[in-house]
Image (tube, rainbow, N blue to C red; front, side, top):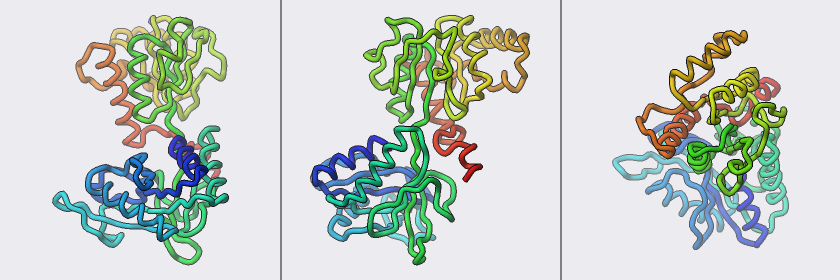
Length: 335
């Protein structure tokens, strides 16, 4: 999302008016859920996607029409027999918000830049569009908003407004920079995860080996600094070179209770690690959080195949809502 916002700001600064489409509601068989975004501009390929196919082609067409109309508003469709039928919201499969982004609007640029800066800083919030005029940048979801990443609420006049949660990508702390880690980080980056790769070997912890990673750090893995540990909203993958090093890493990481903790290896390795940690006083609940072997059981053995199984598991968990990369549970309680 940050990249899309930055690109919108760049084009608007160059004097190019744009439009965007955002999925607000999905009640049927639409391919993308709330929060999916598409940035449209005449004679330029779209950036982002709301699902492809007939739906995306029609939505892009309608979004570009907004450039002449101005403002924004919802549009709803049902997908029937490989066709697209306009519908009222209550009977539609999907409702999208279409919004014109006119060049030369200083307030619009300020709001979009502010949203991108929040994402870069790891902060949360929402953008709220109320038809005409620039969006408002909010610290939290507006009153009446449900769960998910986006949706519709009523503005003070009783008309629909579109809110979009500022969701930073789910971070994955990947300890170990070997062959499987290279392939895993590459796949996860393409799937919208932000990877932070750590290794204690200079010839392994190189940014040119991990071009899609958010960061690559050369660190002493046996004595991690606080900044090199994940938070409770982050995912962790242990892919170090030895059982003993994984044991040291688990001692440091388990107390954090990350959203996901996967370890590369065999069930036999899992037995060794859990037995050692239990002897040191770690609870059964803590040990149960360790996913070992990590990855869906696809049966592959090459680094590329193992990476696919790991990435698929994280994508599956994210789709089920089991990972919490956006508004943290703590911040939700404070709202």
